[in-house]
Image 1 (tube, rainbow, N blue to C red):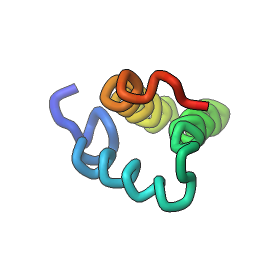
Image 2: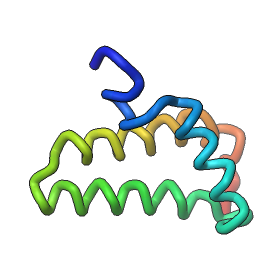
Image 3: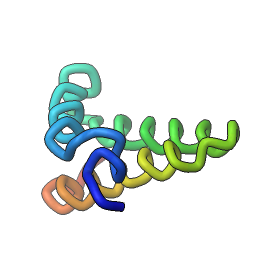
Image 4: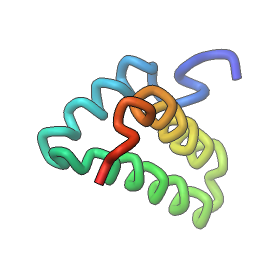
Length: 75
């Protein structure tokens, strides 16, 4: 993939911003936002849209890689 938009469907900064904004809704359970992204990927697989599914999976991996280590004790 040659660009962030191809990889994530948006820029990394947009992915990080959406995650930060999810904190307002999810509070300390922000990991649920990442789970929702993976659910969206599953839906895209079900309807045969593998490109968008890949983008959702890449977003989840980006967020887990960036925030996962800082929050290893999420409950």
